[in-house]
Image 1 (cartoon, rainbow, N blue to C red):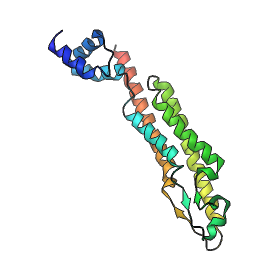
Image 2 (spheres, rainbow, N blue to C red):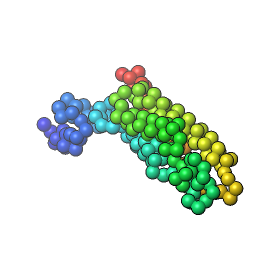
Image 3 (cartoon, rainbow, N blue to C red):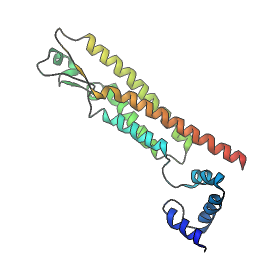
Image 4 (cartoon, rainbow, N blue to C red):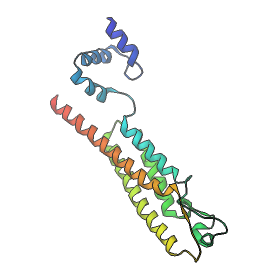
Length: 194
């Protein structure tokens, strides 16, 4: 065992299988930097990079709608007589469609993080989560419009941060899908070169 092989093994033993074949293949690729990214892409036994971050943030945005309301009012405001605002906040619990789509968007995004070894399936799941977020944004816009159009005289509501979360989730899922496609294209081009 030479010194280079020993230092590489100690640095990357967490990520690579602990056999000499993997480590020696890695040192070969490091000597030729052109192929180093290919080795990292094919052999890391860990969650993928940026798309996992996007999917995690999208999942947090999906589930965050349960903590951050869409609209808020006060108990002495006439708006609190509306069925959706009888508890002074409008959130996913006030509409079964919003509830289901919020859960689906957050859950699918979270599960997709762990399917990194099957990029095709991960891409399809991200697309499904994206569709849920689009439907959620449309339904939320429609529900908010209905509340505002049926506002009693003197009633008012304050817009809350929760209104932005479906759009944020949608954007993050789109970015994740784009990164997954980019990785898939890179792996295919590498396979063609081999």
